Amino acid sequence: MAKTLPRICLLGVICFVFAISTWAASPAPKPPGKLVDLGGHKLHINCTGKGAPTVVIENGLGDFSFDWVLVQGKVSSFSRVCTYDRAGYAWSDPGPQPRTFAQLNLELHDALAKLKEHGPFLLVGHSFGGPVVRNFALMYPHEVAGIVFVDAAHEGLRVGVGGRATIRLGEDAKGRSIPPPHENMKDSDRPPTHPVASPQPEQPLEGLYKVLPLAEQRMHLWAQALPEIEDAENSQREWSGEYYAKQLASPQAGTLGSIPVIVLTATPPLEPIKAKAVLQKPIHLDSLVKLLNHHLCLSQHSFDTFAAKVSDQIIM
Image: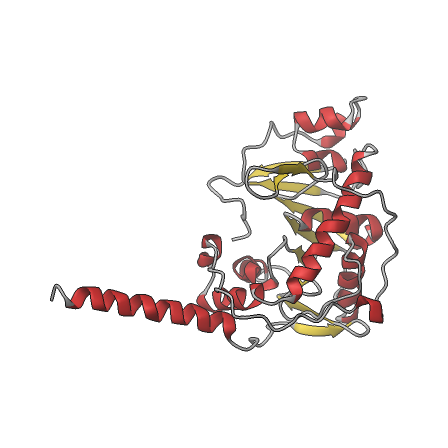
């Protein structure tokens, strides 16, 4: 028995590793939503439930529509909710370049319109998705019923860039003009062809995704291994810096007007306060950020909510 037990353990490890490798290397799973043609490239969007306003969720970097399956299941019981994959993610084709906020906004806006999903929408932006929905509200203010920022990024936020190195979002901008978005794919928009590389060790599934159902865990392993996501995210990071720099250069208080905003964080908030009262004081944005969550100052109707005992990725 003593000799048999190690063999059984070894067999179990081999089977587990084989299963993980099979998940990531398997053919594309069937998309849960619809593929919307936007003029040479298709965007995957999954809308479920009934009710208004329709909730539209914008993912963080490295996240996918199905990562919200637990949230989507609950929200769809009382309202319409749409999750989607940005161009270059999961089932969505690579999209026009560069991947600016405006470009992402245009594609989502047109996909919703083609599916006859009617606003105004309640936008949810997680992490990198926060500034994306913030820009959507500036481009299409009459189609936004409200915004929920979920641990969202913002200009000036200090983030890690490997090891102990950090950078403030916006300080790496090159001062370039942001080009207007376009829908139809051009030859110059097509991503480079990736050469066939030797097999690489499969990336393990991060712990925070292990709360997902098994099917969605498999989808995540498949999607994170696709080469197209790297090109999309590199362009998104590069051009987001130009937006952050412009925001740092001018006061942002009140730029969202009266659009209701809720800030959901996984860290204790400062004393909840309506931004409207703060806006009556002649205070600079940098000082305002020190007093309360950055996003509260963007709207005249803002509130902060603390999600206790929740990790950075509170989408789960």
